[in-house]
Length: 230
Image (cartoon, rainbow, N blue to C red; front, side, top):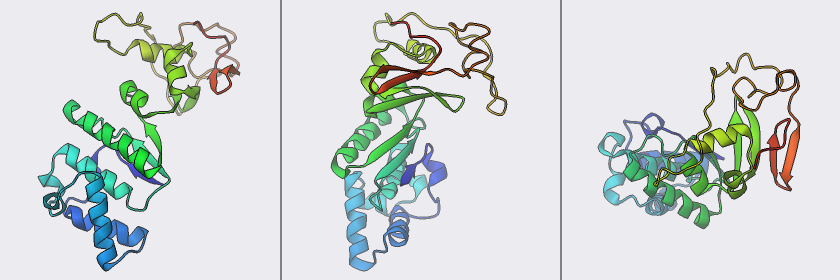
């Protein structure tokens, strides 16, 4: 298991060249030396489209997108079966995000790796994910196949999230506005963790009893006291 962090600036050693970072990672994780290690460096850099010039550069000489490519190459150094992607594009310019997402999708197909993607960007989630878990205050409120979660019916929190996504024609779903302050994770509400902001809450039930799991389909489940509104 490896991880790609949100901000490549804080994840990469500023004093090391790209070649040295990859070389150290390969040496420590899979023990390659000499010509084998050099071949592995060339293979990794080629997979993320880094050139020989980039290998001799230090992070400050690279753009945000190139630094994230370095971070991705380093994460793939040991051929992980699972790669955690923590907001992998949020620190990048919009023009660069698509290239990184396409790269991740291509590497997933060629390397056979599974991603655990952590993101607040629903467009990114929909593009890369096969299954989605919607979390609130550390609790999973809905989980299911990506298309099922986006198509609905939804948990009330999922409905609010999806209603906030802008559309090109401005004719998206009616906005679901949540009122109230976000509770502290150190002092979770009783009952359903979402009841303090839920537009469908029923006093005496939602604020007292943890919600049951409602199975909308074989692999699509929400945590709620009520069947969702289609």
